[in-house]
Length: 130
Length: 130
DNA sequence: AGTAAATTACGCACTTTTTTGTAACCACGA
DNA sequence: TCGTGGTTACAAAAAAGTGCGTAATTTACT
Image (cartoon, rainbow over all chains, first blue to last red):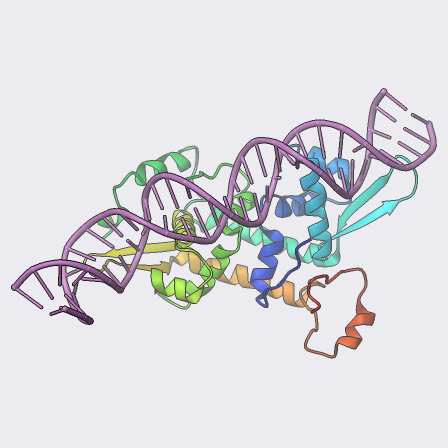
C-alpha cells in the first residue's frame, strides 16, 4: 500500500479523495452504517476489489471506520468517523460550487459535452471574446 | 477528450479535480497569471504533455482561462477565472481539514519520535519511517 | 552574410507504468 | 451449495512519460 509523502496538505487530501469512488462512498456512508454488500448495491459498477481497496484507503485516512463482527457469514460494517463526518460539508461545498459557480456545472441539459467537442475542432474562442 | 457525464455534481467536480495536478496548478495560479513555462518551473516533475492536458481540463471546467498572444516565440498565459478563484477557499478548506481534523494529516513528526510511538493507534505509517 | 540553433507551447505517436477488472480461491455455518 | 468479506494472480485498460516535429523570429557562430 502506497504511503502518503508530500508535505503539502492539499496534495495529501487529494491523494485520498481523488478518483471516482472516495467521495461517492463518503456520500453513501453519510446516510449511516453500511455493510460491504450495501455499498456494492449502492454502487453496482464498482468492482469487488476496488471497493475493498477504496475502503482501506479511506480507513487509513481516518475517514471511515471498519467494524468486524464475529459469526458467520462474516459481517463487517463501515461508517464515517467523526473526522469523516466533518469532511462531508466540504465535499458538498465543492458540489455546490460546481452547480452554482462553475460555468460547466450549470449547463441545463444535454448540450454540455457536445458543444465543447465542436469548440475544439480548431476555432479558438479567443477571437470571439471581447 | 472525455466528456463529463454523471448528473451528480460531486462526481463531476471530482472528475476535474482528481489527480495530482489540478489542485496544485490552481494553487500556483492563484498567485497570478502564469505562462506555460512558469507552471513547468513551479512544478518540475510534470511532463509537458500532462501540463497541457490538465490545463485543457481546467479550462473546459471554467476554472482557468487561456490567453494566446500573437508573436514569436509563441506566448500563452494562464489565469484563474472568477469561478476558479471562488474554488480556492474550498480546496484550502480540504487542506485545512487534513491538517487539523484528519488523524493522518496531523502527524507530529517534528517532535521527538519516541512520543509518537505510543500515540500510534492503528494507523500504519509504513514507508514513512526511514 | 549564411546557416544553424534556440526559443515557446504545444500535437502526435510510441512505450512504459499504473490502475482497474476478472475470476478463482479461502474461511465457515446454515 | 450458498453467502459474506476478503485476498491473490493474471489480464485488460487507462494514464502518464518520452521524444520528435512545428511555427516565425532572434541569436550564435563561422
